[in-house]
Image (tube, rainbow, N blue to C red; front, side, top):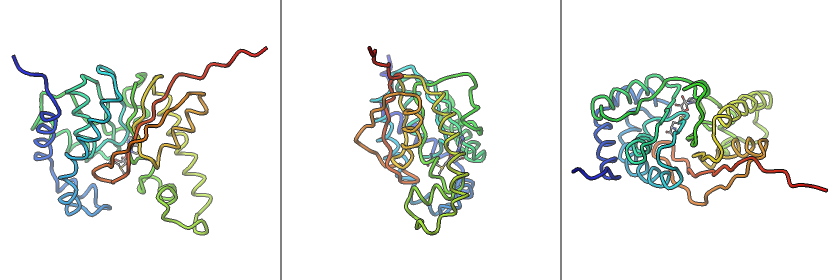
Length: 245
Ligand SMILES: C[S@@+](CC[C@H](N)C(=O)[O-])C[C@H]1O[C@@H](n2cnc3c(N)ncnc32)[C@H](O)[C@@H]1O
């Protein structure tokens, strides 16, 4: 009889997948961040911090549920493997960078063909249509300088108020709000959102609009690639109106 898998097994499998990734292609995908040189520095952190985040996340999630990940990449690999292998969860992992999805899928096929996980190069809003999820994973998406140059500068405090192009800011904020609304609509209640401290406000606004109570956890874990601190929003059901006389 074989023992059920544990985090050591997950990290061993994640490590094997990392060994099979095409780091030259990933260097091109992450050229803004410093390409292949960036990866040789960050790669060891993927297992350490990914494992830490995964362990922490599984304390928030029930076994057997399902997650929708937005912009999941190399950094989330150990986390997603933990969800699938240790909690038997189904994971829809989306990322608009098709090359990163292709490389990750090739690594998974080569190193862990038994694992039911693949990366979909599509917008999370339309992935797995008609399904809802008890967990939404969204790390460093709303702060991505490639998608939201102005919002990213504001979120990270890289721009002085006098320098903000207000029209671009308003247009980006509107588009980001629409994305947050579409993602939040796919979250079951109760549900959990994993997100960075800089992005939490997008989801808090949606929860408030929906009248849903939210509890934010205090502890944060840094991510391996971008380095943003990540925590969890526990989203409850819609607030019930108190009876009034
Ligand atoms: C800065 S990267 C962060 C990647 C990874 N989460 C990390 O922390 O290293 C942002 C990612 O979000 C993806 N993204 C942005 N909007 C998306 C959407 N609507 N659906 C799926 N992925 C999206 C981009 O393609 C990009 O891969």
